[in-house]
Image (cartoon, rainbow, N blue to C red):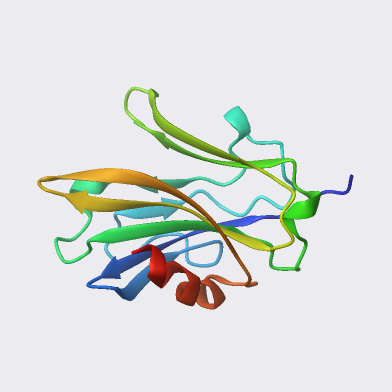
Length: 150
């Protein structure tokens, strides 16, 4: 099986409108609350299965942001038929404790997945696994597929 380059991104939404994004060429959100660790060009080599990570400081996310949607996509168009699995983890960076994990097995003919979202729930945040198949080479292509998930 050949190497697959999947790109992780996070889109910040305020009242169903995308207002910021973090991805391989915009590594830090405008407010500094999200940070992408950088583009990994080869899948399956990251620590704990993490090839690309997006760090989120939920306490710093501005009050008007109510949802953050995480996706992975193949910019070059490779499909998930060639991907064994993808995962999305929520980890407390201070303690290293994994709080949630969502793993999807490959096999789909799509070239993108809307993996998960974190959304405001009362005074805190909640993670929801989504796993929606989508088509798109960039996060901009994926926003229409994200909207029904909000």
